[in-house]
Length: 414
Image (cartoon, rainbow, N blue to C red):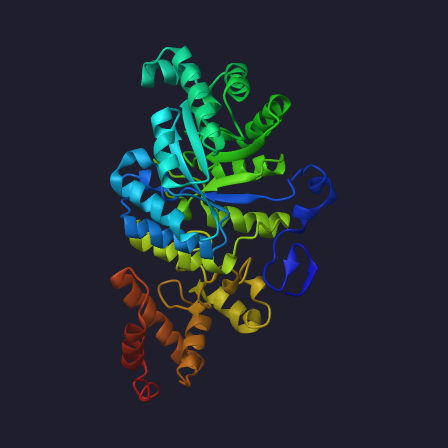
């Protein structure tokens, strides 16, 4: 890949302001940022999403091929099928570290140990109100369970990530006191900053990370949700403050509005910050199609990075751009090229939004010669047909319209 400037390469073209000294001086990225995929556990918590054992194994293989650093294979206590899937994923030794998820309970840890995982993410409620109202526990119970179970996990040789639920709606001193006590009397190799309900603003996230780092000298991990659409921005902000691990799902699957999507986050870090996490970006589209199929979750055609229509050209203006420079300078039309993320090449499509240059491009591809007036007749016929179906025209439909509009010129079209 030839590269003149970090914001403009032969594969992407973003704003040069991203790399202005005044911007870069505020960024404090760690030496390496890793992706921890939680599709198989948190992703499956999206209402209506069900993965079988074989589904989970196939997705885990796809995640490994995409270069994910760590995989959360599931929560053993959920079902025997989940336990079997975790054991099989561990057995296959795909490359990434394999973790399990558990409550802060010794029995949960025992089940994880039996699965053969190398690490465990251990959840505990960490806001006084959710402990009192949702769990109906005395506050001391959350503390005692956390200390006992994390210490036990350590004794079994597991890497322990402490996962305080509802971290961001808690009093910061109270929750940091809890975390410090667990780290001191129990065990903690890393701390997840958990925005369970996606309620933190990017500016507040910067504040949170800085406050946590004053008290906690452990690896920090970002686990954010998308309830207000802020998860990606919050993740980038957290990583720019030194957070080392990103919890994400394929397609942003997850409870309610979902988790942070790996595809968009990885591409934003690569192109806008020059931070290559080691993800195999050209596997992202294929991985998304696999998860879309197995989850039954329909992906919007305009979804960033993996949407089917991202590289479809309908507008006459954009079609003219494509004809003028698309082959030589594709980033004049798209912020990154299709092959970076494994998408198919651009395609000119026809519909209500098509202009004369869209039609000229399609006629040229079919070796049909037409005058300006004839091409405009096809434009109007295409618009009328598209309005009647409220959809783009398939190749067969376009050929049908073309033959009806210009029967002589289109005689050779099959």
